Amino acid sequence: MSSRLHNLVIETLAQRIVSGEMAPGTTMYSEHLEEELNVSRSVAREAVRVLQSLGLVETVKRVGIRVLPRERWHVLDPSVIRWRLANAGKGTQLRSLTELRSAVEPAAAELAALHSPEDLSAELLAVAAKMRAVGRAGDLQQFLELDIHFHSLVLAASGNEMFAQMDSMIAEVLRGRTDYGLMPEHPHEEALQLHVDVADAIQSGRPEAAREAMDKIMRRTVAEVQGVWQHEPRVFT
Image (cartoon, rainbow, N blue to C red):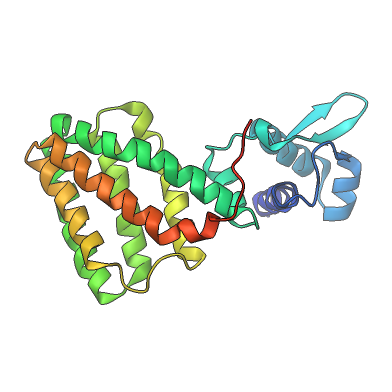
């Protein structure tokens, strides 16, 4: 029960902050949160500590809990990504993340073709083949889980530990696309084939082909979802 309450407080406050309901500079007080959300002092304080660790708030002695501006948020954290995708500004968030993926994932595919262990490249090819079958069948939920696994494997197979740590972030982006209706009912045949092409190029040790196929995947992704952010202003910090 305590864990559920803890998560509920985190989610409630995070959504208020990320949505703009609580503007930067807004001050909260722990005792007010305890009363409003009907939770104990320890639950409220631990929730605030989590939000503080993500850069959403800071605790100021003799002042209270202050909401921080977006440039202080840990924008690559999966929880922050999920909260932002659930709000009105999801276009800006989706654009930033898609552009980041477009820069990183082709490079990761190229490195994977050079360095991937055999077991990872074999698993990647099997996942790509299953994605094609599931995508053609129109099972979007299973396709999503396979897609998350596929991209995670590419990052891991690169042998770059920083790329590999991006897997949770990319998983949230892929879940967001499905949850908010930004995926076609049936993945396009070309997209399905491109995933197979990436996996085949990695397994056969063809770095240029792996990079090119992953770049095409990302360009298709941009073309499919850019309407969401078309009129969103860019963020300069």
